[in-house]
Image 1: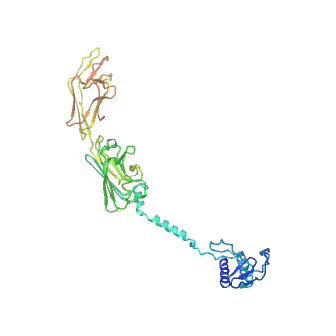
Image 2: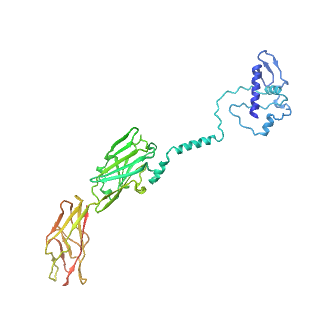
Image 3: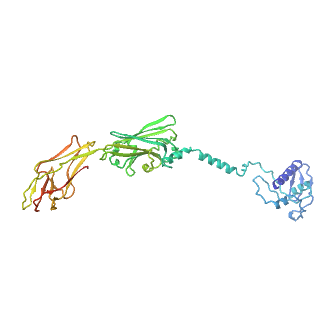
Length: 435
């Protein structure tokens, strides 16, 4: 009710000013601009007499005063002009003149543009609609595909597969489809996880790679130099930081491919062998083998290198006369130990041996009596722990180690007195890949 009432007063004032322009003063005297005649109001009020001493008449039912009592006041908008309360009158014309006589000049409010007042609920609906658009802008299969690979929040590829081959080099090929916008990510890593057993034999100088990724037009192909690969021995990984390469690329359902190849200085000994590699592209350096579901893995199965050792099945010292003082006992014949290999050409080898004390069938023991004389003439006791017999490198053909009767294994009973019986010892030979 208040706004229509104020609007009505403003319209009446404007009509009066247009038809009979007047200047209004606090004394209620007015001067006509057209004729210059004074038009006194209904009642003269002295300048020193306060206006609020007038006795107001009874308010008209339904007037502004009654409305103000029944409805709470509202804050005026920036374009509203709040009028001072006027004295209620009996008719509309008198009310307008008296209202004008006690008001200061009211300027016409300037026209200003107001922002449309939003209807209750519209902001919430618009916000909800915008949120829905953001939530549904990314394909649903993106999250599903990442979850399937066990790398939620990390993986940048879906439908991952890793293949490989091995001859003189290990060649790994990682393929997958893009699932995220690379431009929104800080880092992009192409990671290959190397098996623990093979990591010590990785030849870092032989690292090489290539890539084949979608471009804005066509396919972008190139090579990855050796110095662009990083070897992380702690995580047992070889990775390539692809930030610059993919900075202008947006991952899409097209295929991405990365290749890594390298030489192994050698394979660990043993056959058969199975070594599993893993590959992925992520936005963090993580142990991808711990998060893999198997689709990003490839297993190298190989026979592996084998060291072969051929030693005499028995060494006979014959019959020996018992002497009261210590004596050295040698073999009657030469002995030969043969070192050979399968698929281990160039591998370093080391031959070691230990022996148990001479023991008779009745349980009598002669301690520290088994010795070995090396090719260089040094003598070691085989009962005093593991002793190095010979070292070398695997060659073709096999490497025979031949020792004459006074070389290799011999016995020294020293001051001990053997019994007239048969004594035996067991020699343990070991051929290892060393140094």
